[in-house]
Image 1 (cartoon, rainbow, N blue to C red):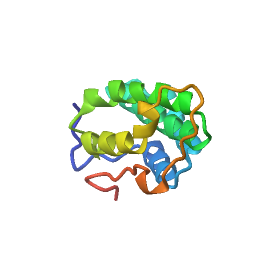
Image 2 (cartoon, rainbow, N blue to C red; image 1 turned 45 degrees about the vertical axis):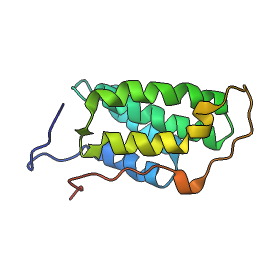
Image 3 (spheres, one colour; image 1 turned 90 degrees about the vertical axis):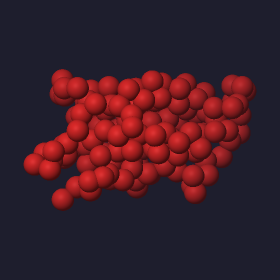
Image 4 (tube, rainbow, N blue to C red; image 1 turned 30 degrees about the vertical axis):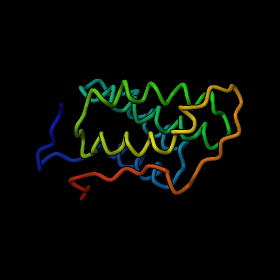
Length: 133
């Protein structure tokens, strides 16, 4: 697990992706994080991949692609749990709990094309500790 020292700063693309994610612009957050992930070769590569997949899962859910959302929901855990309990300022366990709550109906569904509506009150957000300067 990677800990940040006070002198380290968050990657600008990481923060930009979080901003888009918290605005529920999941497609754009995925694009921004993918730009970071493509160039990045450090220890957080799988972490960024997990965030990308979380954004795409929520994007699919919002567009009614329940099968796509369900498929990605499972893989997000595989990536992010490697970095629990906290990584790059994110409380992984809290985020996954909120993500799971939001996608609970999706994960439980066995139908190929169920009609499940996204509940805006359950959308997860990303808040970093320490917060960016």
